[in-house]
Length: 152
Image (cartoon, rainbow, N blue to C red):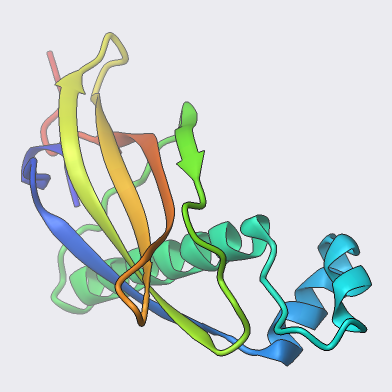
């Protein structure tokens, strides 16, 4: 979406991710071997926090790609997405255990003009909620969004 189309308070469902024992172990083998140390203890595994955050980002990218494809299928020009100046306040209030299904969503919390021509800054809050209704991931991120009309 273009900067002008983004409405504060809009919530976008990003889909969900299942955290199976196999997916937790596969991620751990590649990125976080600390999880492997607990695998032999017999207790349910907890996913790495970065595994949960990575799943959220994958759902965000897939959602944005689907939106762009839908716009292009309707013959609309899809706006470019600018760089992100980063994220803040990443938290994992509850563990994600094997067998959990986490649903992700993103809410637009603020937006403002920038000194960068043709771009505005949009701040989002991303959340992950497990099947028990517990928050398992939250963070605030920002991204430069292309304006629909060029500033003169």
